[in-house]
Image 1 (cartoon, one colour):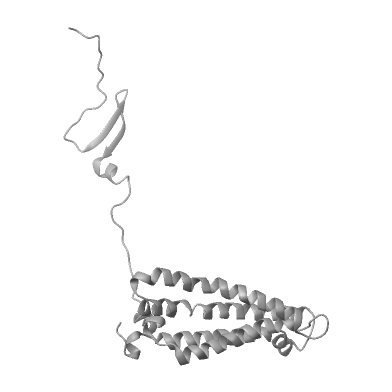
Image 2 (image 1 turned 135 degrees about the vertical axis):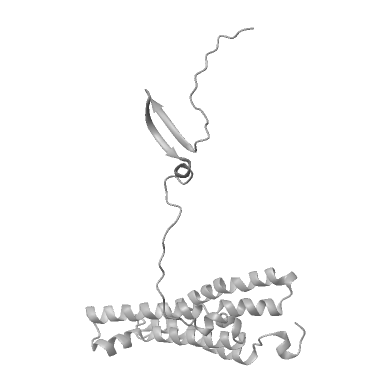
Length: 220
């Protein structure tokens, strides 16, 4: 049975590793296989690296983080104590601005106080970061793996509970402390009282906290 089909040659494969296209008898494309395989990009690049001076990696980075290398008891206690001192400093922001500018009001006084508060905010945030590493390490030492997730979830609520209690405390301070009916200066105690509680907590940690069960004669 014959079919009414027509075929037109559109490409011919040859041994020559090139792609050649013609139009009306003229070659309009003539590319090598190497060019097609690399999309026209060079397959090599010359790089010259200049000699650099030797750089010594800090020991604390090379040997591991401080939290892994230090006793968690002292790491946490010292970090909390420094954080408390930073919060004490917040309460003296107005005094520091006066000591620097010699003024109690005005743009210089206000801008200096804002700058001091901003710097202390950063310092306080960095010091607060010393709390999580020793806690995470202590929990893995003292809590069995089968209870670790539950105990860590309880521990993690301390951030929210503490923040809520501080809000209540500061509300009481602003309504009952300070000078006069306007409670002038009460805001300072919103930093000083929580800082005092934190400092007492740091002392308690230094006295009662232990790094690992083996440090008190218990099995790990």
